[in-house]
Image 1 (cartoon, rainbow, N blue to C red):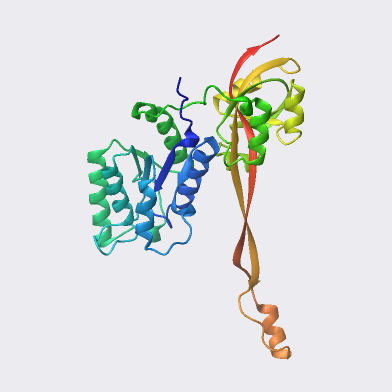
Image 2: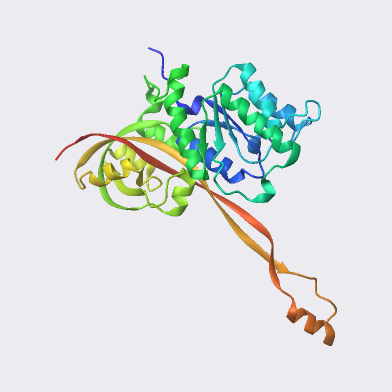
Amino acid sequence: MSAEKPLSNINFFVCSTYVDLVAYRDTVIKNVQSHAGVINAQEFFGARDQKPLATCLEELERSDVFVMFLGPRYGSIDPDTGKSFVECEYERAKIKGIPRFAYLIDDSHPFPIQYVSTGEEAEKLRAFKKLVQAELTVDHFTTPDDLAKKVYNDLTRELPKKGFKLGKEEDFTDESTPSALLTQFLALPKLFYGRTTTLTVKLGSYHRASEEACDAFSYRYGATITRRFKPVNEIVRDAIGGALSKIYASEDRALALMNLPGDVEVRVVLKTIQGEHTTRSPIYGYEHEPGLLNSISATYISDRKRVVVDYETTSTLICGLELVEAINVDD
């Protein structure tokens, strides 16, 4: 029997303009990555000795699924065709024949005016959106979280209709026992996320998940809980130590996890999840460089404003286990 293809083996090409939709891209990418799936986006292309559009089209050729979202900006123009990079990528995906998913920003959703195309570019954007709506069934989005949720739900619903068999791999070898899988996941979370395993555990108390964890795993803060657990199997306990001590669940699954009894053996299906929480710390400076230290400059220095001159970005990788389902409960 052939193994089902997990989301982690599917290469998703993310297509959009960048400067206006960077927060949307980040949330969509984190959402797919945390639940499993290889993201193919310009954030990961690196430096190359070729034109940017050539790099994008080259990467598109090795992708399995095309995900595009359009905001109020037409984007960078290819001088050879007069079309935006996004439109060129859309046309290449059509020629390649891979599944395409398109999302358009809701016209009523407010957006910073500096990112809204005008004049000829606005006309090109309207024509492109009209073309996309004629060729595909599109959905509309507002916030980054709204878009990320719609993208993930659509992918998991529609990809099986396109021949993708989503789910866990069957016929695991000895290397994929729960203890081995979790050890591999802790060592290489970027390679072993999205895998499922079944454990018999005893559950402890539950708490609201932190904002940092919700950001990393693309959960909705305030609709997600964590619950402490202890594997019954001693080998599994030794394998994970204290590195994996909580089970995460969001939305309806959060209620299911809350309702499971504590201090009794519960058999649960869990999925490995990972994601990055990014923080931006301001770097402060002064509005003007100080002058000479004399009576005039002393007054000048005291009047200078302390301002943010840059930001230091720090990313923290977070690993966890997500509740898939509870198989049985021994009361």
